[in-house]
Image (cartoon, rainbow, N blue to C red; front, side):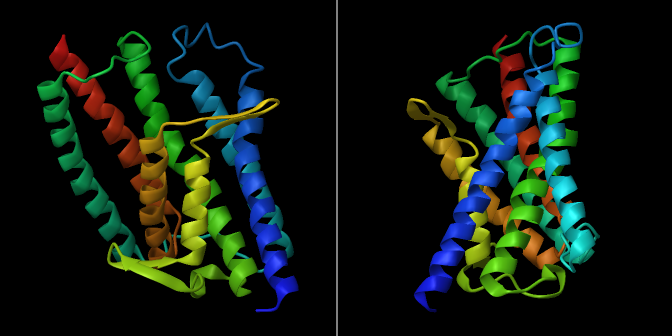
Length: 256
């Protein structure tokens, strides 16, 4: 590959990264404009819900515009249902085991940390509704459907990813293949879990959370590539989030 083309691709990745990390920040600023005390006095779900709705809508509007002026598609159909449901079942079984192991470890080590809000019906229903209905659709639109499709277009020159591959394979795992496109998108997804400030510059993050986000992002990406549909990664993402918080909720009840 000649140097100018390589530099152009690097610049594209950097600009795409800035866009993907900037949209959630813009959505957060939008959510900050509302007062949710009447519906969510404990801050359990409303602000997060508005943020995810706004960031999903921004990316969705971009997708619609791009689709209208080009042949690019973003995996909105069901694709290969057999493959998609296979990955959903796998993540469901894995997270069932995760919940059991997590609860046992928290009980044995007494390392459970309580929720930052009272565990009443409104907070639990609101929080789990947010996790189940908004986190997967919003974040997978951004970091799989949009990010991987645009990366594929730039890196491989392919304009209809549903019908073709996603670039050079660098590793085989999860019963699928890790491509360059998938890896870049997963790393950006991990960076989205880092809280940046620029004046002055600082970065706050939980190392394990960032690493886990990259790892699970690769899994979502494999599903997206193989199923040719963003619907199944959305479902998987929601299962993971509900399962993670659900384990903490169960443990909190046991500790009482």
